[in-house]
Each structure stands twice: as C-alpha cells, then as structure tokens.
Image 1 (cartoon, rainbow, N blue to C red):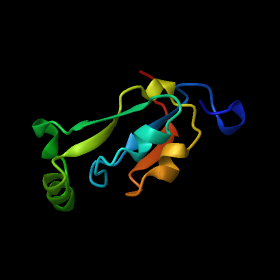
Image 2: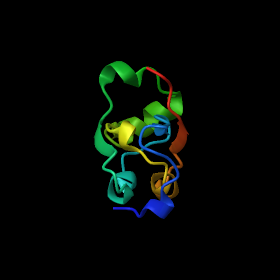
Image 3: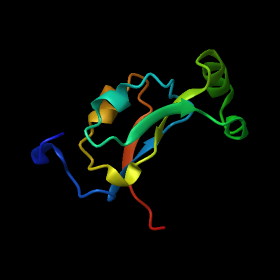
Length: 98
C-alpha cells in the first residue's frame, strides 16, 4: 500500500486513462498500483475498429492484450502507473461526473 504522502487526491477525483493505441498489456501498471486499479485483459473485437492503423498492428502482434482501469474509482493519483508504463499509455485526468 502506498503511503498517504504519495497520494495526491481522495479516491475517484482523478482517474487513469489508457491510450488504446499505445497499450501493449505488459502489466507494469498492475504490478505497481497500490490500489488494485488495473487488470490485464483482451480488447473486445467491437472496440478494435476504433484503433488507429498503428494501434491495430500493435494490438494484433500483442494479442490485443490491454490494461483496463477496472477500479478507476479507487485511484488516488499517486502516479506510479504513469511512471511505470513503458509505452507512455497512461495519463491521469479529472473524473467526469456520471
């Protein structure tokens, strides 16, 4: 668990956004996140059409493995995932009201 000094926000104020064209599902974000925000899965076929040509090629060669912020509401904006991602696919943004 991260110490409170490294956390910049209360849960749910800031959420991770994953650039689907960059993510290769290497799971660095899963391993460093102290709040279990991420899981690795396969990008559904219905969403693959939204990828750029480069994203589709990259996805094909990586089996469309991607990181998913399945518990984004638990993010406390420590930034460990952003630093750990070798593809620079994660940014932290203010959560939008539902």
